[in-house]
Amino acid sequence: MTGHDMLVDRYALHGVLGRGGMAEVREGWDTRLNRPVAIKLLHPALIAEPGVRSRFEDEARSAAQLCHQNIVTVYDFGEHHGSPFIVMERLPGQTLADVIAAGPMPAHHVRAMLDDVLAGLSAAHAAGVLHRDIKPGNILVSAPGDSMKVADFGIAKTGGAAYTMTGQIVGTMCYMSPERIAGAPASIRDDLYAVGLLGYEALLGRRLFPQDNPAALAHAIMGSTPPPVASVRADADPVLAAVIDRAIARDPAQRFGSAEQMRAALSGDRRALLDGAVPVQRPATKVLEGPPVPVTHYPPPRRRQRTAGRKYGIAAGVLGALAISVVALAMDPSSTTPAPQPVSTSTPVAPPPSVAPPPSPVVQQPAPAVEDQPGAPGGGGGHGKGNKKRG
Image (cartoon, rainbow, N blue to C red; front, side, top):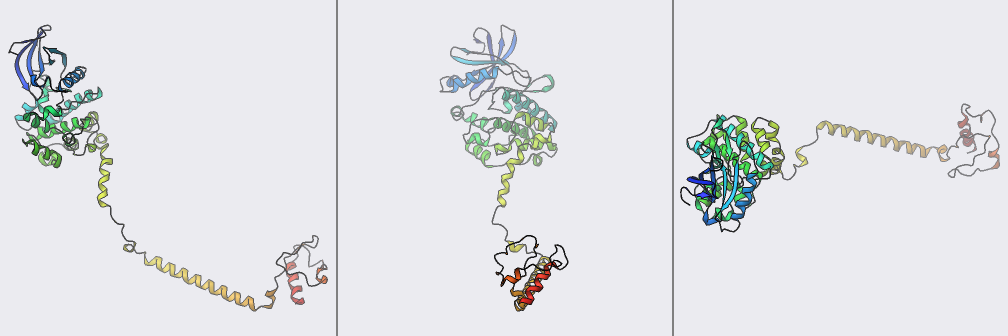
């Protein structure tokens, strides 16, 4: 297409605003509504690429459904001579990449930038749209209040397209999470990881992973742990530093679960900052696992030993006394015949099985009434004395 080509007899194409691995963005003019626009065109070489064209179309439709103050608005989507295109709002400001190229940003500006990006992502994720390519070049600075707007929603880079263009490998991989490089599908946590990298890069004024070689870059992302933010920018407030540190954690389970949670943590909500992080860190205590400490390392106090000794002494004394009592009873003649149980003379009671049968009928005669009165003193003892005399 030439510098002044027309798309579908409506959009006039002008100069190139930027190029990426899948598409280029051209300055345009909507002749029907008389307003400036930005037009994204899929690279001609990728039109016939399996899956690339359909993904461009499907995700462009999803992006067109989004409407938020921190998202670049998609006006139209169509096809011109077999080439798909997306028409978006044209912003006069710079990209975040231009701002970072001028040097490290003040910490409070970084915080405001992250809040804008997270607000846009929160709306997109709620609509079921993942960005998949968060990077400074896709964050646009709008003129009113210098607020940030997220562009290129859903225009993801496929594995085939990314690995056929060296420049795009570097541009995309340096904001990819370790699990995405390992081949895992994109997720919300990947978008939030990239947002954390935006904050880190804005504070440093340079990329966190500066490697240009794809293999070295992938090794650095997957095998190294970024230094804490506090070690590279001491003037960053602790809340901002903690949010960025958690967002770029290598373990996706330690990152924020949603853009809304990350935004709340950025605003100072301590519960949002810590929620979900503690359970993930608990397995780290497994490094302390090992054989149990021997019991001998914790001997019982001497006090308990003396108490046990006294108990043993008392028990021995009781046993001795019992032994003596048994011997004495064995030597007592009166102990050979058990004493009869006291009963009332008004009711005959058969003797228990253990009691020997009465020696003679004489013993069955009733005893004197005075001694057999129920409750009379010595009533039980009278039978004992009579048994003793008969022996």
